[in-house]
Length: 335
Length: 299
Image (cartoon, rainbow over all chains, first blue to last red; front, side, top):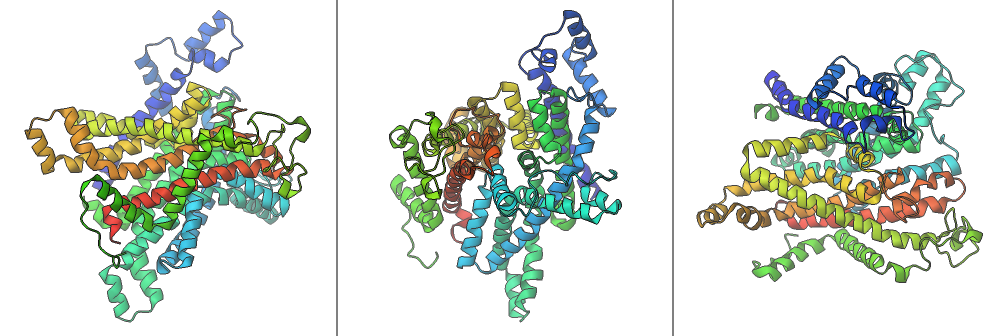
């Protein structure tokens, strides 16, 4: 197992290296000079320009610039945001829990409903229920989620008035930030009504962000179940006279779970892309919206570090999934 | 399916096509998807003839007019008008051109570069392979929409740059598929015999090996087609794709957020067009996978 983890780590080293190069190159690929790109088109005095150029180290040879960039990163220095003048890493860490909270809820929804729908479809294979479920799943998979979010707002927030339109919590609530997770912080502060407000704010964004993963998981679960249901051991279990619930739940589902877990792991990158759209629609103060805002404000230092951090996080999660996968399925480890 | 009459062993191109159609048409959803796609294609081609009005013509006196079947008073605007009084139906019809063009362009670009890279990597192996595949890994390490956004930030907002960015983001899938297929085909007898007969590298790569890897590539191309349309619409929605007043469906939605309470049809219609198009293409994709993947044929 230890060797397996080492092997996996060794495999991602070049990718991590490449990601830092990509982030490093980003600012230098912007049209025009990097300093001009940062300060905008308003123009600055030549003296100020020279000072800035030296301050950012753009007068050094390129390999030395890259070396300094990596050294800064290793010291935890991700640059200073051009928009807020605060360290980028502070901004990122402030907003990150909001995205995690949203993603976890979306994933919870997607996994629970997706697996249920997939199993149900597989058992009733070919029936109209199966066809309808899979039709809905394909529609979900084809969904432009930014539009789906707007539709849900029109119906549930506008027409029915059930859920708030945007944000994480009603503005009337104040409590100290402990973890950055609204649901936990509101309980820590002992404010159950704030907790309820946070839940109400979470529902629509989670549904929107969870839609595509839900559809993917449902389709994958169905096909994995169909494959397993045809296996000899399932037939044997049936022939032994075990009740169908046990055959499906234990004999079939446990084995179908392996490809499903992989699929769930693969959704992490997709969630981050979805978070950009979902957070924009619901004004959810997470890193997806922060990235969009940074791009439109031309805060390229934030964009650069956001790009790097998001890619590294997605990679770390994928690595974790790989390891978990090996824990569940010993066959993988041997290879 | 196994109960059906067995088909004679296919000989020649026509028979192969017939066998393909046999498996494809079993999937009713796929046939429906194909029909919708053909209709969309016709709409895109004949857009100026079909659209009741030019897409950019503004009827200032009929701003935000509801569709006639939903309380609107102007029966000439079948799907209502938008915030500056343009006929939404006409814009959607012209928008079909953009979305389908985006799909074709992106898939062609991603397919061409991805397949070439994958062929080269799988055929030559060694450091070429390592270098190409590591670059593909790096591209895949970024969430696709985020990478496309950043690329557009570098290239500048606009439809063409958005398409380039999406093509770049989608190409690793083609490279990986092609490489995997090449690796499994490379040591087969027909390749070895072609090599012995004196075929050069290019001929071996493109003429001997490539046609035998086409199945999964076609399926991936279909999926990429719908993905490209979705991503381009998302970029348009975020203001980084096609710029107004282009009647691109995602761009049409960019300002729609302001009207979610006052004029729902401005929000609903463009998104519905995206959903129908993408769904139709994905239905075709599912059908193609069933028809082209021999492993699934007898299931």
